[in-house]
Amino acid sequence: MADYRDRRDQDKQLSEKVLSINRVAKVTKGGKKMSFSALLVVGDGKGKVGFGYGKANEVAEAIRKGLVDARRRMFQVEIVGTTIPHEVIGKYGAGKVLLKPASPGTGVIAGGAIRALCDAAGIKDILSKSLGSDNAINVIKAAVVGLKSLSNREESKRIKGAI
Image 1 (cartoon, rainbow, N blue to C red):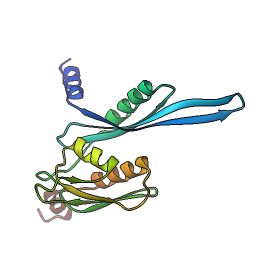
Image 2: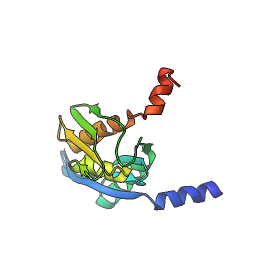
Image 3: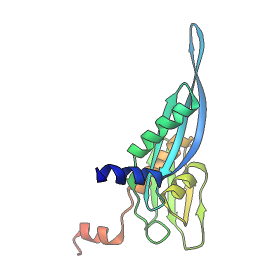
Image 4: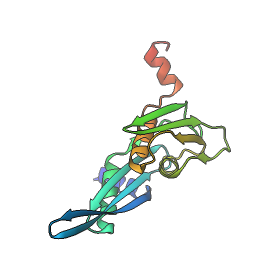
């Protein structure tokens, strides 16, 4: 019972950001069937972040489905102070994203989807550059691949056998 309450309280603390809402049309012999897709990012500001994609006939339903998907895909990001531990390049499809740690006070130097992802994760200082596709879905998936591949110094030493 307490576990359910903890999860519900955790969901209340998540920040949600809608990145894009897209109207899509499926052409059938009866005409065009309109629907909507929504790309969202959720995070707790303490290193836990996720993104989601929802499609439905109404905008509100697409956003709701995207939120459910984003909560399901949440993962922990390795953060050192206010930035990431090391430089990383994330690749997904045609999307390629460079993420570099920045000194305190720099801020989030990122565009669109990457900025929302970093803000939701609680990363305050980072430099980023999208090197490939400018499609928001591919960019965010590439950034997620990069953030998931981060490791801290102690973990790297332990894996290599130095500790």
